[in-house]
Length: 310
Ligand code: PMV
Image (cartoon, rainbow, N blue to C red):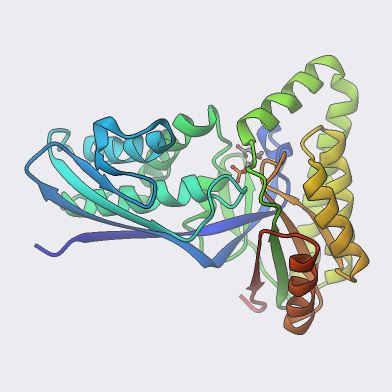
């Protein structure tokens, strides 16, 4: 039988990371240039994985593939075939641990492929729960933003565990620059929690402001007000640094982007490494900024446009 396939894209958080863990809203965008794909086929056991990181029995996979193994097991369970053995091949262009949703995208692709290999289908809500089961193996208690966004085709508003589409007034072009430093989401989330336990009033004020910025940005995205979006991003970067999730490599890319004329910039995702997201005027500006950020040390750069009129 032909292999069953699954795929999911990368995502970047435009505004609201960390605050979303405390119930504030967030806005995220799909990054179509990067994606995870999986192919699954039934074999006579035991289950196997094939990826750039590891090839061999699923049961013997190293710790960093725990999410993938959990995703496969959750899908087999949901398909009512816990004893089926699969070989799953994974290919992903999404760099891991950079705040771009790599683990959620790989999980989504693996689950989709594994379900299809078993001839099973699940509804959207069940699919979301399965991705969250795998994400919990990686991050502890993820908000669900990644799990929702990696399957979205347009910008999404995330609030109270659910997403809604966001109307986009005019094209928004972003440059994403990888600091080359592995993001440490779990650690960053724990750092915010510790800070909040020590000084709840100050941290809650920052979380409230991030929530208010997200609401403002949603309106600005719909109205095509890119200057306002840029200013909100830059303010969010400062607030996130204040929460203790920044990193010197992120600050360097942030400063380079802003001084080179980006409309705004901020770290994106969990922080303590990972990527900076910068908003630019158009694709020419994106090409220029990409060159500049590469020259000042970005490990990789990508451009993504969120199309207006959607
Ligand atoms: O670093 P990422 O892509 O896993 O994003 C984490 C976003 C947080 O808000 C920090 C955590 C969460 O669960 O939403």
